[in-house]
Length: 296
Image 1 (cartoon, rainbow, N blue to C red):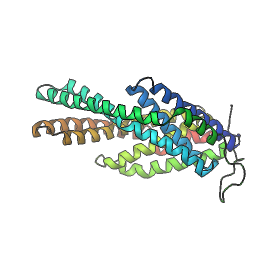
Image 2 (cartoon, helix red, strand yellow):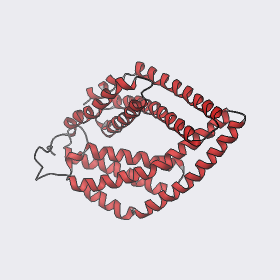
Image 3 (cartoon, rainbow, N blue to C red):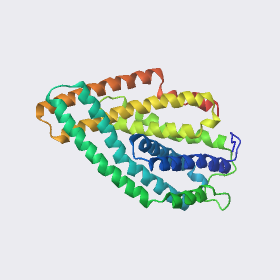
Image 4 (cartoon, rainbow, N blue to C red):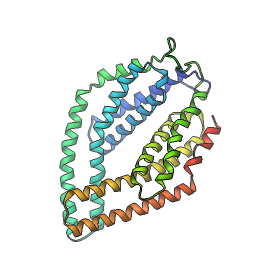
């Protein structure tokens, strides 16, 4: 279905959520062929985009039916999280071992082997959990819920379903961008890991929302999305280094080796933060939405 800025909100909601729903189940079925890192990542991203669509268009649907869909999709995201995080740790420490020499290599190999065993257990739990959530049941249930937006008997203060998606989009983007701007000052402090992690999440939500509404904006949206992806990658890598450092501290390395590994991770983190600071200069987050907003 072709939709544009003048499409009624209720009709646009059906079209947008149809795309997100189909992508979610396509990635789910692809994962069932093999629990490798890439399909796990693809389904996790699809589930997050789906959830952002549900958040964006929540005013268009009955709260009870939408909540059922949202809880199921959120549950899938959580199931995928442990396996995905372990995959990232295996990849990182395998790469790190290739950059070091001496006893550290053998110790990191032991850590990697332990992570691989943990990953096997997590993948089995994921397989069992997804088996209990039948695609054959969920797919028609989701379709029924998302094909029936509210048209009449609207709740008090509810949104007009016959308003245009174009008029709805500006406010929807502002909601996400506001949080990014609020978090940015603290995230500029290299030592404030928590603020950078929160900023990463806020950027991710803003990027997914911009993707959902990009059909309204033309080329301006594509450039903004690409820049947001850079921000999301860099803040994600910062958070990864924090997680990896905690793992090193918990693992029980000999003190000298632990300190050496932590110094390597800290140096990497400092370098990534430098890239983040440079990106803030080249593509300021505060103005990142200006070009797509002009197209609305």
